[in-house]
Image 1 (cartoon, one colour):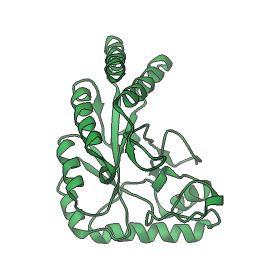
Image 2 (cartoon, helix red, strand yellow):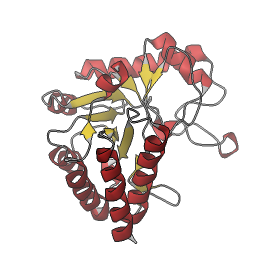
Image 3 (cartoon, rainbow, N blue to C red):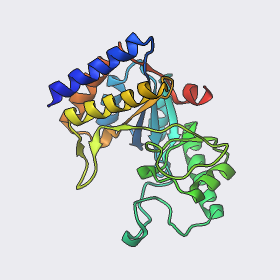
Length: 247
């Protein structure tokens, strides 16, 4: 299954190159809070590639900030407030703000989180909500907070004029029943489908976002990530978040 899916992905990449285009990719990794062996492994694998790291403000480590600011290819995102689910089961999918919160209190929480990141020595460029939960009240609070861009998942959630958005589309993990590797065949097919959709629609400049979660990766996830990047590096162009949003 995975060999056939990989072959079809390579065929789709060849179609792009035959049309005179190289796909645009960007990469976001979530849930950083401090230095860990998993984070170091991620940075080693990503060497030379632009990488956006979404950092949880609550309990952020000064050591983490000193480490990340030395890496010129890393961009920082504010990953919500504290990454603690505030929703009751009846309220729907997880988020670290309640469904009843008003924009004012949520703005204060966002600003407190950004202040925590800045005091640690990090400069967040955009906002990435935990669980990719984007609702109108969050967009209003972000606008008041001074954020001009955010990242979610594959167009899901609310939108707001004037707030730029760059989403992710390929997640290495499955989450239902606990985090685990999605599987090579499934991921190759997800990538092929995203590429084919853009090619057929003439949207060659629409980036594809890769999403990882270094703290939740098992060995199969790490090995696939390494192999995938070796496959993609010569065939696609990776860009940083700020560069793609500016375009």
